[in-house]
Length: 434
Image 1: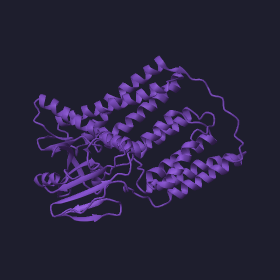
Image 2: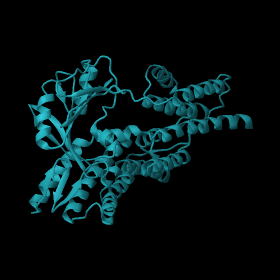
Image 3: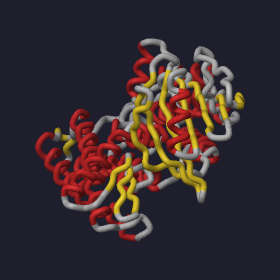
Image 4: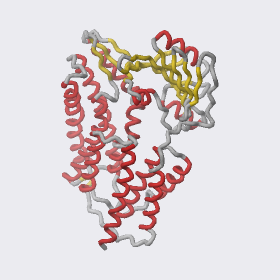
């Protein structure tokens, strides 16, 4: 009996050891949101213990193993490891509830990518609306994309701002409150209501971030000042936490259903269960300890060809680089609709540059993103868009939908130059042909 208990406990510990490789590769970051989510998981396990044992994740694990045999990206290995560890927990200890999976999603790299890329249009709208309100209040502000300037100071609405970094925290707060009131009033909300509360937390956080940027500009609280972060915390408390406490409490009392203790089932005595999990653990270790691959090649994508006036270089990652004395151009093929597109939002910032003043600009009949890159005294201008050779767009939903439904093979085009005039010249050269 004791041997069986220790054997079952060994699997979660072994999976945690494999997860450490993702920390070493920088794929997982132990930031505040991650550790808050980790503590919330412990609370969930204590407040809502696992139910009857389940094999429901077994088909997904099998599919993910097949994908990892074909695809070598780190993301697929990470998903395999997550699903395998959850399958081990549910089949050996008991089925987990939906809140547990929501927390895992929020603290995952997938959520960080989505919040940075897909919420960018929201940040542009926040900046524009804040600028209009401030000008109506007779503040001499100018708005440049996601940046607002006032008397020489710049205020940017981007993921580095505390207001939008609090998105994950706001979602974790609503899950914590749901668990807290479920335990307090012994009532559980239907899944639909839980999802609606999470969406409400996102909306409230967006409103809180909007009020935050208004206050920062109106009170002229520069990023270097301590009050800059304090303002973010105050807005989070006033516009997110307090409303959620009142709403979640009322929702549980009004629509919550009584919670009944679940009956545990008998131990699973299948002789293949433990050996099967050992085999799956070895498979996960085999994939996850391999050298990570950043694969942005696409055999079906149009191949870049040499262009007059540019030195062309094919990089090992599949990116094609074009360079002359005035500009640097990268063409990055995207393998599939679910792939990341390696935009300047992540690539240039990963090289130590700060990307700001991101805005939309129409060049040669095409709308592109334009931003300013700064690293020490080095300042550049960069523009980017996505194209399949015939159609160009900057919409994440647009290019992914066309890639899925029309079998279009998109690539990201990034043009960087020293000054606005040169950037416009380079864009007019590249847009008609890409």
